[in-house]
Amino acid sequence: MRSFYELTSRSLFSQAPLRLRRQAGASLVVSLLMLIVVLVLSLSLATMSLQGEKASRSDRDRQIALQAAEAALKDAEMDIDPQIVVAGTRRDNFDANSNLFFEDGCAVGDANIYQGMCAPTPEGQQPVWLSVDLAYDKSDAKSVAFGRFTGQTMMVGKSSFPAKLPRYIIEAVADVEPGQVADESTKYIFRITAIGFGANESTQVVLQSFYRKAMKS
Image (cartoon, rainbow, N blue to C red):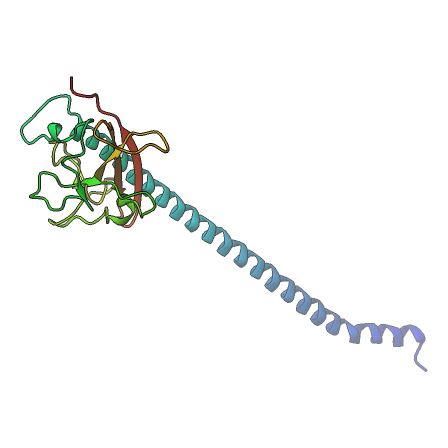
């Protein structure tokens, strides 16, 4: 007759392989779960890194466009009131006492000495600077290319430089108090609207400023 000890030992030994298989299966599941977690974390970190690089590149491109637009504002101020008079200047066309040379809807074309000089629209209508395609740069454009009337130059089309030259328009705005009506004695200030481009032409920044020119004595 077999002893109780012998039967118990055989029972334990017969169950050992089953336990080992269960433990191995559990270890495999845990390993797979850990691998999935690591994979998900790696993908998340890679995505965040790419998004960060893209945001940084976009911000850098916007800064290029911003600086180009600021340069265009300064160029327009030189167009209005050059400190040094050179051939081709339009200084006399910008008179604080008159808006004589400013055209409705803006003067058009590179061959037009009054290009980019715009009479403002009546109150209640869409402003000229919103209706003009500032980025349009063909020969019949309404906006003026940087340096055209000032002789200034700017490098474009290379790596960290603007894709193309910034542009601007100038409006003669009546300098009157609210409620007053413009008349023959009205003075004018000049509203400049400029657009700058990033290294990617689709990155654009539009800025606006006002310039008050000293009246002729």
